[in-house]
Image 1 (tube, rainbow, N blue to C red):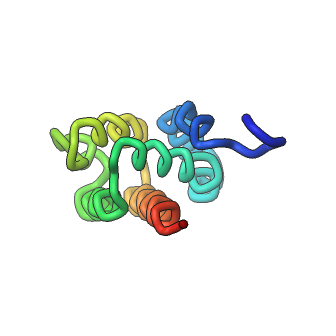
Image 2: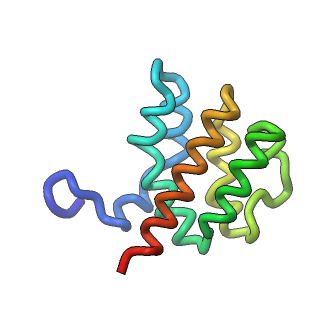
Length: 119
């Protein structure tokens, strides 16, 4: 970790997002925990694999309409194998509220978009 409490992209690449997702979904306030603990590392990791906000939003819509289990069962839920390798563990450990998880994916997409738009 660089400066006190500040995490670099390299630090965020080491976060086990699937583990954070699984832990967050076991808490009393999973939406908050997903956003605090997993959204930024997830955005950095999928963006580093070449993922675009539109692809993550599309996956969110698949989850919203078909459910987490359906999305997890897709052969390639993201456009490339490398991107799928990043997100598949999240889909495998996620359970419960499809809408909550889809909303989290939308937040991940928004973070990627914000990071891409900065100078």
